[in-house]
Image (tube, rainbow, N blue to C red; front, side, top):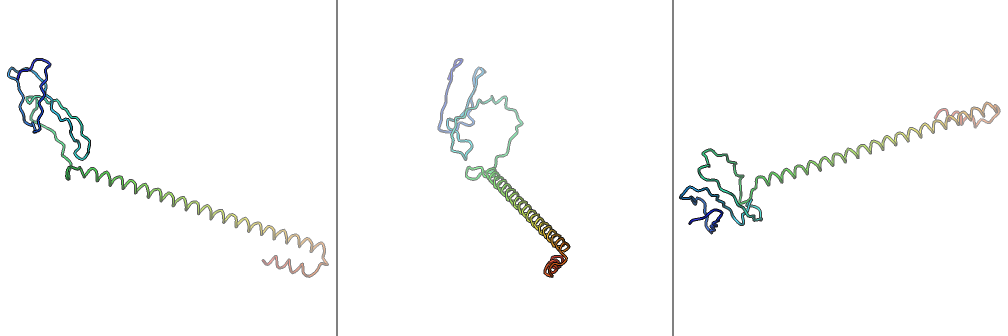
Length: 165
């Protein structure tokens, strides 16, 4: 087959064309593209995309290559990264939930402590108020007793009772 400049030859096949050799007899330069109309990448997804790649001449390939290990697969599905991601998300969710529960517990404890302190303060203020009223009542009775030395015996008993309690 002879092609002139800027002409294109498209070859399609139902079979795999891997390993097909393409060359020229007069060493003219040309570009070679390979691809697929509906490539499914990654294998676990349902999307199918058009994929084309320009292939370099075999003379430029070299002898040293770097490769990346393929993840373990089960029935075409990449399970390891998905399981790691799911476990990481579950762990993060659990940690956030525990943190929220701990913060809620701390808030409840702080509110309970504040309530207890307020109740103690109210109780102390009530005791101080009762004590102040008792002191005022005793002073009132003492002043009445002095002012009226001939007062009845009942006031002396009340005075003695207040001083005892």
